[in-house]
Length: 491
Image 1 (spheres, rainbow, N blue to C red):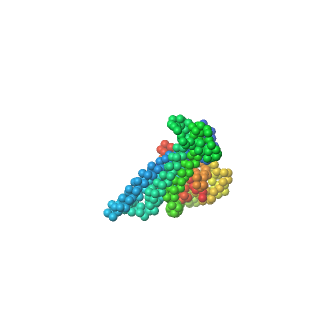
Image 2 (image 1 turned 120 degrees about the vertical axis):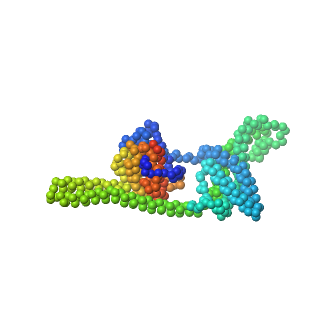
Image 3 (image 1 turned 90 degrees about the horizontal axis):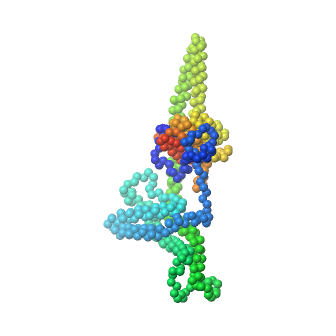
C-alpha cells in the first residue's frame, strides 16, 4: 500500500462521485467504537464514512432556499440584458460584414460569447442549489484541436446555435418576466410588513380615493365609514403577510422555470449521453481485458519465480536421494526430509497464489467471510468493519473482483506499507440516481507514498475496477496514513 511500487497522476478520479474518504478522529468515542481484530494505532484513521443526513422537504425547506433563489432571480435580468446587447451587436455586425470575411470571425466570436453566457447560467443555477445539468459535448473525445476546427466547429454544432438562441431571445424574455414578478412580490412583501413604519410619513391631504374602503366595499358590498388611515395600514399588513408567505413558492417556481429552459436548451442531449455510455463501455471492456492480461502475466511470473523453482529443486533432491539410498541411507533420509519441506513450502506458495482468485470460502459464505479470512492471515493486524447485512451476497463476478481487490490491497499492505495496523471497511450505498454501489476501503498507519505507476499493482487494480465501470481512489500522502478505496457498481 504505502510504498513506491505504485504511482498516481493528478485528477485520476473525480472527487464528486466517490464517497468522502475516512477522516481521522481523535475523540474518545472514536477509540471506543473500534472493532476487534488487532490493536490499532492512535494515528490510524477510521474507515467508516459519516452517514449523509437526509434533506428535509416542506415549507421550511423552501424558505431555506429563498436567499439563494432571490440572488439568482434578481441578477437574471441585468445579466440577460447585457448578454442580449453583446450578442446582438456581435452577431448582426458579423452578418453584415460577412461579405468581406471579417464578419465570419465576428459571428464565431458571438458563438463563443453565447457559450460563455450559457455556462454562466448553468453555474448560477447550481449556486441557486439546483441539481447540476449535464454539460454538452463540445468536442468529440480524441479529436485534435486545431485553429480551423475551433473556427468552423461552432457552425456545425447545434449546441452553439441553441446557446445563441437562448442568449438573444429566450433568456431575455424569460428574465424580464421573472425579474418583474420577483421584484413586485418582494416589494409588496417588504412594503406591507413595514407600512406601520413609513406610512405616517406619507402626506395624506384630501384623499378622494381610499384603497381600504374600495376593497372592503367591493368584497362585502357595503359603505365603509372606518378610519381610512388605519384601514390602509391594516390592508398593507395583510397584503404583506400574504405576499411574504407565498414568496418561497414564487421564487422556487421561477427558478424551476429557468432550470427547465436551461435543461432543454443548454444541457446535453440524450443522444450524447448514449454516445458517452457506449464510449465508457468500450473503455471499460478494454480496461478489463488489459487487467486480466496483466493478472495472467503476473501469475505466470509468480509461478515461474516461485513454485516452479521449488519443484525443480524438489526433483533434484529426490534424484540425489535415489542415488544415495543404497550407499548412504542417512544422507538419503536427510535429502528426503529436505524434499518434504520443499513440497510443503511449494504447497503453501501455491495456496498463497490462489487466494487472489476465488477461494472456496468466497463461493460458500460470501465476501464478508472471505474478508475476515484475509484479515486473519494478514501479518499486520487488520480489523474488518462491514455494514453489509448478514449473509448478503452479490453476483459471482462482483464478489470475485471485490475479493481480488481485497487480496491485492492486503498483499500491498504487508509488503510496502510499513504499517503497524490497518482497517478494512465494506459497505453498500445508494447514490442520488438510485444506483447501488459496493464500496471497499482500506486504511493503514504506514509511511504513505502509494501512487499509480504503469505495470504495478495499484495500476492493475485501477484497470480492473474500471473494467467493472467502477472507480479506485488512492489517498496516500508521504508520511501516511494511506487510504485506498474501490467503488464498484452493483447493476
